[in-house]
Amino acid sequence: MKILVISDTHSNIKLVDSIFEIFKDDNIDTVIHCGDNLVDAKKLQKKYSNIKFYMVAGNCDPEGNGPEAILEADIGGVHTMVVHGHKHYVNLNLDTLLSEAKESGAKLVAFGHTHIATVQVRDGITIVNPGSLSQPRDGIYKSFAIVTICNGVVNDVQMWQFTHKTEVTLNTKLQIVS
Image (cartoon, rainbow, N blue to C red; front, top):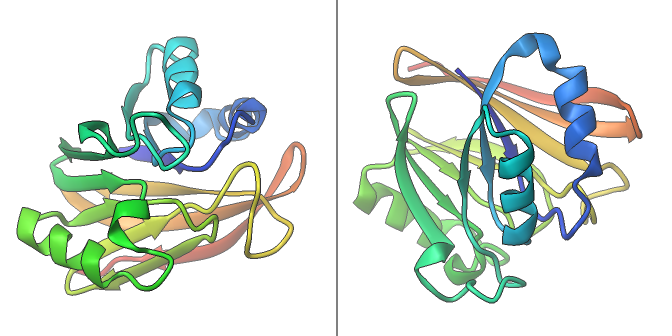
């Protein structure tokens, strides 16, 4: 299973079309949108109706302080937690996020808010922030992640950057060894 993880699109969803064109042979069958903006995620869900979407509200969404701000789901056999991150103080550190993930039994956590791409494994939990497809804060490149799940286990996470409107480069690949 291939999962496209995006966040902080802030009304700039044109690059998602480029992602699907570039990775058309990779069979992306799921999208996780980590908030800001929920309206963007719903537009994409309508456009790509053959793909399963998981989405949460962010701090720039009216629903950002309600129940739409967190989602837990079994995705490809992996208990997954999706949040935007503003309610977990991810600008400071990932401790609150990690604590809640442990409590929920999540093995994969996707979040946004910081506009800074990162991937790490802590205490057996794969934590992914795809950065931003609109306003990156860690450089000039807009970014996204692709997570591969095989047999109910997170296999690898690839962090990609747009170096041009239709060109991407692999920035980081984390192979998960369980």
